[in-house]
Image 1 (cartoon, rainbow, N blue to C red):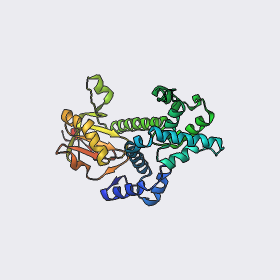
Image 2: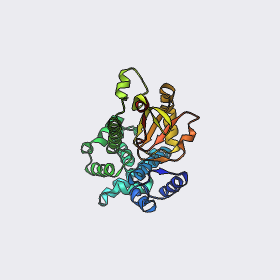
Image 3: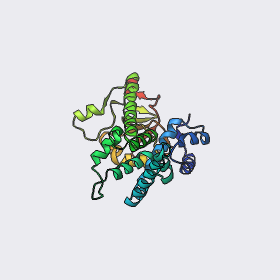
Image 4: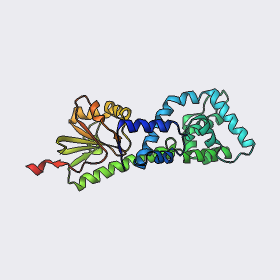
Length: 282
């Protein structure tokens, strides 16, 4: 299944995505883009959702808006509506289920002066809904966390686990290829602050280009994502260690390497099988 997209296909996918509701979007996109990997679609959906929430979260969670949502929720409970009240409200207002549930919890536990409760309290309740003092709100929040693939403690744990899983997978692949390397824990012990996931002890060549380090990203690489990593991480690695390689395990948009300002950083969606080890030519 395809994981590397040209810009035209990626733009078409984003246009289709914006017309779909927040939940069950991957299944709809599978029918429209059957040639794409399901994991790639899931990753693109998650990243697009996060971008949209960054732009609209403040507008959708003003005190007036939250108050209206809270009243709607409590009225629905009084009317004995079937479970999934917050999920339906999420679809209606355009907030992801977990973010909506968090806003409702904040309103439920607001202080006497109408200020928000402590962030630690809200985070604790989101992680353990059994601690919420209202039975209906506890169950509705639990449903929201189960349905939200982008936000909330379950989603965050999944992302962290997936990132670590691919870092370990990369190490195993390098060991199988007999490539000597140091991983980021080794580099931190040596006093480095910003460290790539892998620093090759002996450089390798990929498609005629020498590679000194490898960074593992368990996500999809579009221009916005890649520019962010260039600024925050990758250029620092290039300045310290020279040319390197970024692996976007769930694919990327073609031609991202053109934005590197003549700094050699290769982009792939897997560990290249055509690596040339230096000792093969000694």
